[in-house]
Structures are given as C-alpha cells and as structure tokens.
Length: 112
Length: 115
Image (cartoon, each protein chain N blue to C red):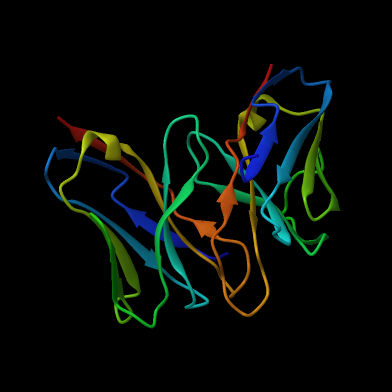
C-alpha cells in the first residue's frame, strides 16, 4: 500500500509566524504533489500543488518545495494568520492518473 | 451549482437500516471516488470509478456497495452498518487520462452516525 508520511500531527504557530509541514513519500508516480486544506464541516480543497520538474512553487503566502533526493515535499505558510487554522493534507498518487492517497493530516492552529 | 454536491449532509441510521449516499459532479470529470474520513484515521480511499467502471475497492466491507450509473453520479449504498462505520464520507471527482494526475475536487461530505 502506498504510504505518505506527514509530520507534524499538530502545529501551533503565533500570528505572523511561519508554519512548516512535511510529507515523505515511499513509492510514487513522481508525477504530482499536492497539499489540501480542510476547514471543519467542509471537504478538503486543493491549496497548492507541484510537479517534480520544478523544486519550488510559490502562491502568495504559500510555498511548496520538493526534495527528490530526500523523497520529501513540504508546505511553508509565511505570515501565518488565524484564518489559516485548518487541517492540511499532503497526497500522492501511486501511479500517474490514479486516485490520491493522503497523509494523516496536520492540524494547524494560528493564535492571534 | 457547486462542483461536487453530496446529499444528505447528515445521516443517522440504525444498524439494521438501509440507506444511500448520493454524489453529483458538475465539472465534466470522468472519474469519481468515495473516501472515508474518521477521527483516528486519515482520508481512506474506498472506491474508484474511472470512466464509469470500478477500478479498485481497497478491501472495503461488503456492507458498503457503490454504484456509478453515469459519469456525473455516484452512490454509496449502506446496509447493516456497524457503529465503527460512523464517519464523514467524502465524494471526489477528477479528470483522468493523458498520463498525468490532476486535482481532485471534493464535496462537503455526509456525516454518518450509526446507532
């Protein structure tokens, strides 16, 4: 079974701080590395994704970086805000074009 | 219409009941999925339908029965469930083909409680 190991399980960050969440993959299609954000009572929604032809992608305060040799990709949230408090999931498809397998999630709390 | 719509949003059922969850996608996608999300486990993939054919079921108990009548609709039929089946059931859709993985769009889920 495809495994995606996500850490930490929970994270508390002061407003304005940097939130960092990591994801390690084992077997992968090496095709697509997304981060999903989920608020209570809602389904997960894509936050940012990267394809391995680039090592980093930035969208506003959110940056995803990819380290092929370490088999890891990470999410950095700069200037974290209380509205960023949510659960974040990394995911990886075992084969290109197949269903996403998700990590266990990281619950982020940003204190004001 | 929102991209992926699930009904009902909440469901309470007894262990001897039979009920169905419904999912509809308005995105023109050709693949649909059921995921289970419980408090102590990550998003667990239950069923995949690609081009209206079931691709994998990940050893889900037979008390869960999926149905995909067309590319826009997906059902999950439930019968003789157990209390441990209480969870948030999420439907998702994506476009497959072309050799690349693409974004999966999720519905808001059905919160199921088995009593």
